[in-house]
Length: 538
Image (cartoon, rainbow, N blue to C red; front, side):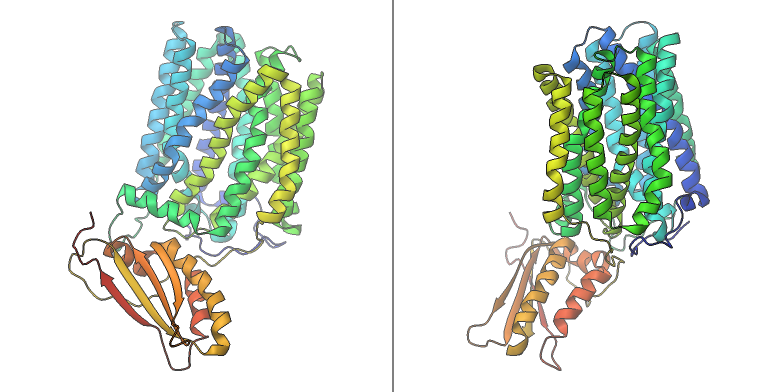
């Protein structure tokens, strides 16, 4: 088993090749199994979209399939991410994938006897989304357990290409199966595709993950994850950039079947071939993106991919030729994998081990939430003003987000050192404390270092809040200007112990070391721990 990544260097010309993660047996087996699963998923999507049209659904009803598939993920992904950090991720994945397999078999059986209605089609699609919501954060988080730390960008690219390679085969295969045997054949293919993933997960012997203080409770874990996200500006930039991109980029996924059935007058096989162009673009991305990434920063790559995507989106909306649209989709596939693999890698490398699944859940939340909202938004705009206009608005939105993102949502080229370390001194033993904890640290700082100390403590404050502090502040004594008092509260003693033993990183330690270098020589902060005086807080 590869080591857990903690400090990933910036991409460079010596970065491991794109295929390097496939040298790890478990990653390779899971990647192949997911590839089969992605083929089945896309075959099922094509069949479902076409079946909805055959059942009398309008443009809005067809676009709602995307919402049905993604809205459950939007609602479940955050608690599922917390579960992924406090229970065995392998078992959670088995539960989620099994649910998806059962829903797929049910859809195939009902389609075989012509018992599918629009409402039932949406409902079973939503059930698949529930299983996906349970699985996605843990699938993202386990990647770092399967490859070496320097291979995370390559693993993110391979995983992004995996989904898009599925688009190269799955839609065309789904279209052929639907045309030849009916949608039930594509639904059955999707059901069978889960067998490989379940087999790999069953055979995987995952190494136990240490929890010195035991597993967290679900609600507390959710709160801790949200608190971490709020206080990590690096990860926050990735999240915001992903949300903006997905909001506008989702127009393609919502409206492409409308373009195929309407202006292009294509059948189900032709629609499947169109989606295959996206997979061809993903294959090109495997060849092109590593070279571009080695020569430029993540921000430049995401910006370039966004602009290329926007231009190709206009072509899809205006072109009356299936050939031109197919070529535009190849370009879109390349841009899609470039943007999302770069954002995914940027998200993973700034996260320490303890909140990884729950934080990546928020990354997936922006991804799926953008598609869920986009499915309604772009479907409604297309219904009101036409498909070409809706795609044009989406393209303009992508272009408009570029200067905003480059100004306020910078993606840094280097990654922080997020190895877990115990840099705080052990707190005193406290028997079964109930209620919140107040921690104070009294710092002695010479006048000439006061400004630098205050600046340095801003980073320390963010570290305290990331690891569990609810409130944090720094105060200066009016009668003794050399005395600074740092104050923060923690929900309970166990949370404070987790700050000491499970959640601190080398980055946090280094931030505190900067502040400690500015105190009076020979002094150290005086630490006090105060417990809630009234027992358990009501």
